[in-house]
Amino acid sequence: MLKKISYFLLIIILLATSCSSLKKNYKGYQLVWSDEFNGNSVDLNNWSFQIWKAGRVNNEWQKYVEDTSNYKLKNGKLYLTATKTGKNERGGYTSTRLSSFGKKEFTYGRIEFRAKMPKGRGTWPALWMLGSNIKEVGWPTAGEIDIMEYVGFQQDTTHTNVHTKYQSGKTDFHKATPIKTAEKKFHTYGITWSEDNIEFYLDTPNNIINTYAPKIKTLKNWPFNNPFFLIMNFAVGGSWGGKKGVDETIWPQSMIVDYVRVYQKK
Image (cartoon, rainbow, N blue to C red; front, side, top):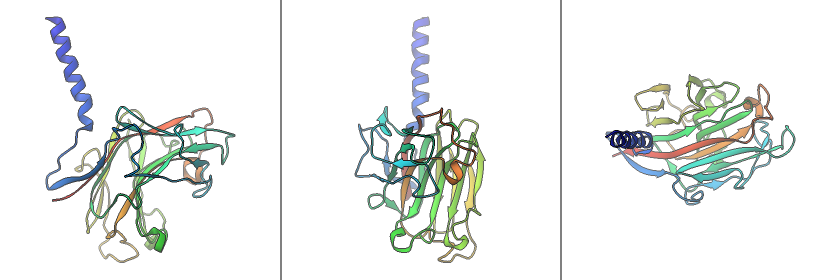
């Protein structure tokens, strides 16, 4: 009898731990695209590897490369890994940056990343979006939506923001949100984006943690009526991530992404 009870409890636990990856059905929305990372490698129909030299933006220390030491798919999850390959300085690290530019682009909807953060000073992972016309109009005119940024020196605190031409790209709409288990558990980082506003939420769309909704919308403060593409990257050091230095003893570190999903209104 005890064996039967133990077996039943094991099934319940397995179901509970797996339900976080079940596709949600949001009332009034339909799932239009997702990447569940169930394959053996990054799906190049969805993503492109961006190859960058260290310091290209934000004085970051990592080189972005396409190398299996910096990414892998395992058990239905994507690992983006930053690795120390040289001295503890700019150019001494490698990492991964994936972009859906030209492949998966969206205007409006509910966009979700479910992920677990790395730990340690100098880590700077991000899940975010850029306007697809960035090559034509540049940044910040194209617009930027930071669905989640994490800097390791501020442990268990995530950040949301938008960047527009209105504030010359400054972070006046930034919001910090404490999450005690950001490095230990998976959380859903999402936005509900319409022609009226962008609502940032944590774990559930009802848990709104930040809202961007200018009353009078102009091309400068609201470039968000255009298609945007997705970016996942893991930076090291830099103007923000390295504000308190980079701990050279913690590497490698990984941001682990369970899925990316996009819902739009029916």
